[in-house]
Image (cartoon, rainbow, N blue to C red; front, side, top):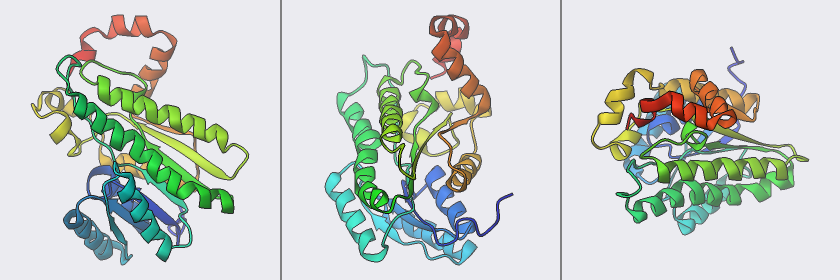
Length: 266
């Protein structure tokens, strides 16, 4: 297991920190003596997370209120961070959401909003921290994508497209930063037991169909925090789903034929 002091005094900005895996990441960072910066829209929920971190770890986790999908909010948030912290060691672009619909039924505004948060919000935040990371030749950007970004399924066209974009952006940025000491990691989890599905799957049918396969946010957060200490290119969870997405890249028509109804769990 890691040395408990491995993240001591590291400044880790976490978007979408008010719930789900973002909340768990922030708690785990504090447990290893890092300083999580909590970023989300809900002041009330962030204060609850802040207090939970204080109670569990005695770490003071600053909170910053803003909509990641709004550039002015993002600029203001990071300007406020800059006034207190000289640099950010790690940016974890976790904020995001999904809505599952057949494309013929999907609202274009919903798809636009998914791209605004999942893709442009990630870019907005990265744009804010990258100049300082380059100047100090040190940093780590961790972008939360999804297995949906590698293997799209019915009723997720808008969401999958946004996560494909996250992967494309991250892979290009990684190459741009190859000659620096700045790492770019993408995280591709399968379905997790979080409030994500309160919006994505309002019927509850998808959750019911896949409940036994769903990941715990604690497991995903643990792997993400581990990669802060030992950076890696990608984190793919669960392993069997990673194998499926790799096979799909090699033989898409075969996988689509063999998987059959497995793609129609939504």
